[in-house]
Length: 591
Image 1 (cartoon, one colour):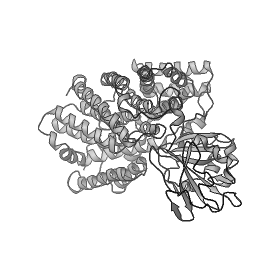
Image 2 (tube, helix red, strand yellow):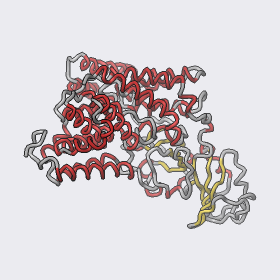
Image 3 (cartoon, helix red, strand yellow):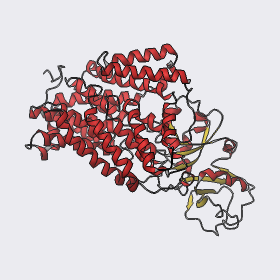
Image 4 (cartoon, one colour):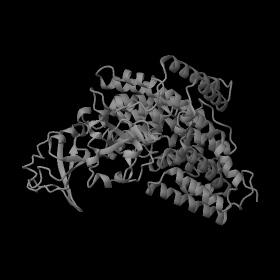
């Protein structure tokens, strides 16, 4: 039987649709309950459909050369060249002029909105992260979450502003709809920026935690350990006698002796050789431990590294280290670095540092050697809070030329002189010819996880629509909105997308919600475009959790936030965002 998209596959409906729904349900549960990368889970689900005969090999492979996916890859590569310019650095310095928090937040929004409308949001936030975190005027907690929120909202203005929009565009093309225009998102995106600007500038500071000054942000949150070496003068003396509790910026919280964890540590506890002393506090004072006799930070072999620079980094959501224990991650060989301290938001860590399983968003203090920064995958593994140049920067003249060419490519597409894909291909060719872009850059900025996730999502959406599974799921999930008209159904699709993006990632939410939105519009016999846009805006509304959007995760540790801080500051913003979206969608995108 010929499917809805023109390929020969299994009959739609009945047991086939039930099987597809079962796989999608399992995918959804795994996205929520496990820490496995979403790209792998989507690829696994697509593989199940492939071996089940629901999508032939030719159709499966075609998803990975979808024009929208190729466009996404090209925009990420072109944006990587703009990262080499001082544009973001200059704007970040401009943000911190003056001592008024509302004015600083206003300048932050006005800088981030245009950048995130055209550049990778992760790169934009990464470039502002260090200056804002280390500023002398305001607590980082007052600036970093607004930074993430501004980047998310700015990304809703254009087709290339966020990978979510490009994924939705790709799904629309596969469903037989017309491609979305570069500035088609701006009809709602610009009012969203205005609403976000007002909320962030005038209201967010009252809902964000008071926090501490940059110099105090690490106190009582970082977690580091020191081993008592043989021959130490502290052996045989109590904690109190050794004055381990007399440090101003570090507090001895626990003691590990063999397989035993002593927590809290009694002042009368007698120190033995091999004991591991666990401190919490301001790790920037870690060298205070040097005054004690034969205490080694983490391991004795790292003492040499501690005489080098200390670097504070945030573990990326794309890091190859996720899920690994500190002791088995081999930091020394991979990065010429050693982990001397760990922080996970405001969560109190316990036990041995070496036994901690690394999670996205963890903030690590690294003692680094001279080869740190030369690793091929360093940019994929870390966001640097204390900034280190990981790539050669362009000169001022080259930077102006690179930005001008980028703007020209966007303008050519906006004026419909060239398709976006073509203009980006020409731009990248020009960058290569001018020496701004090299083969090594292509490899380092490959973003294979996004390619795998998007390509797999396109295939899964195709199977869901062709099998009839999406129609059945839509009937069930959107049942409360049925019979109430097209607007109510569209609002239901939007709210479903918002819910999904809080539970899983924004890209995964868009991939899961699109087939349901398309099926709902088809069943109502209305134009699917408002429903498609509802998915795009809803999947971008990741304001309530640190894990729903990668920029939220990036600021989690450096801002010393708790999970509840995202709910407190993000919920009013979500309400403003949702009201604007639901009011304007039917105005600019007719049913």
